Length: 286
Image (cartoon, helix red, strand yellow):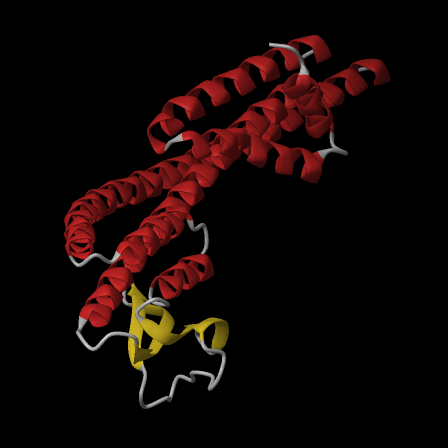
């Protein structure tokens, strides 16, 4: 056997061995990705089911509380307490529009300012606000204060202290209870919305991980640049379509989550071949 034949045979054997190794690595990566995909999908389905049940409960509680709020407004009308009606309208709107725990607590505390001469709002040990008289300052251990604890899903998130009732009847105490329950309901809904956004973020990340995986597989398979970008464009379009279908029931805020995750991915991998080509197809006219 001459050297050329020997070299050809050895090179063919090495190429076959490398191809076999690459195939095994690809199969292992595919199996791992499939397992991760299935695990993520199952977790997201469970979380989504829990969120649906939680939203149904919150909707029922909101209906009951809405009736009680209306009853209080009607009572205030009959008592000629126009300032209370105006304040309640503003307070309930502020609580409903609050985007953070602190905003919600402050809005609820403000709602008591007309029925108590001093109202203080705390998140943990942090004093957020005091309404009414500035002195003496209300403290968590003030004995004369009415303590309203705001507890969400078993976790205390804040305390509202009210002292020096402006009226002799128990209207202030009843108002405090309604505002507390309204704040709790708003915070539970806010928590549910945040969980939903987190779920959608994980779903969007999973879709983009799949896009990256296929791109890497195409690169390993030595597809030409134009073929690879064509497939990348189609896979990104498909990911957007799948995400849009999933996010439809979540409201307008969910629509931007995929783009946010995509932007973060481009920032993270902008100096890689995948990042550069993804940026090209992501910004190309549809």
